[in-house]
Amino acid sequence: MQDTRPKVVDDLKRTNDELHQKLTRLRGERDRLRTDVQQLVRVIHVLEVENQQLREAASSDGIVRVLPVQHRPSTR
Image (cartoon, rainbow, N blue to C red; front, side, top):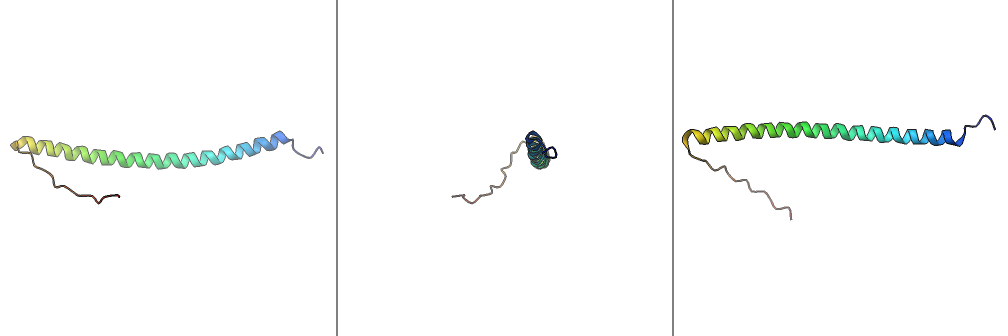
């Protein structure tokens, strides 16, 4: 009987294993979100540059040009 581990030790080991799995999963999610944020920052930067170019072009001759419309298929 003295060679067996107490139940509390087994419970702590199980809890520790579960927390390690959860930590691994959350780190993966964090890394994916970090990548998404970096991509969104790049997109926003490109849009800001394009917007600035459009503003400069419109202010140089006073003519506002309409951009072509891209029709998107209906999701229904």
